[in-house]
Length: 161
Image 1 (cartoon, one colour):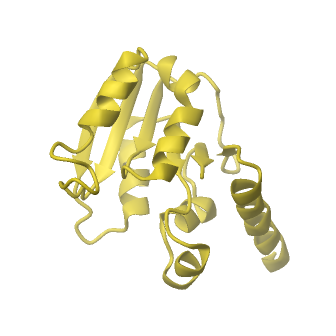
Image 2 (image 1 turned 90 degrees about the horizontal axis):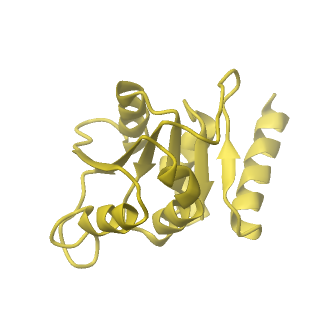
């Protein structure tokens, strides 16, 4: 079991870092559609999140509802700007995407747990997320959203770096 888990992580990391293409993670037993009605986009204004968003634009434009979710957004020029999420919402709206913004506090929970719970609460069928915004070494030592989502996706996820 440990060997298959290690192989799974290596295949996913290798694909994300070497292929230049997004991946679709589907949890065991989950049903997946490439035309979901409700999509959750995990947004942190990083290059990785931007890439995941661009790579899934066709899927997003076909959805009935797209929720841009920011957990503990930082309001400054280097992160989200003066109004967190406004730029990405405008970008998606120009592409015909029906957007709702959700700014959530993490409180005492991990960001991955907040995202998974919000996906359940909103009935999301798919999550779009950028991968490895921090180095793989840092994520291996301290953990991170990417590793947590790979280990326990909860729902189908499009992930891109």
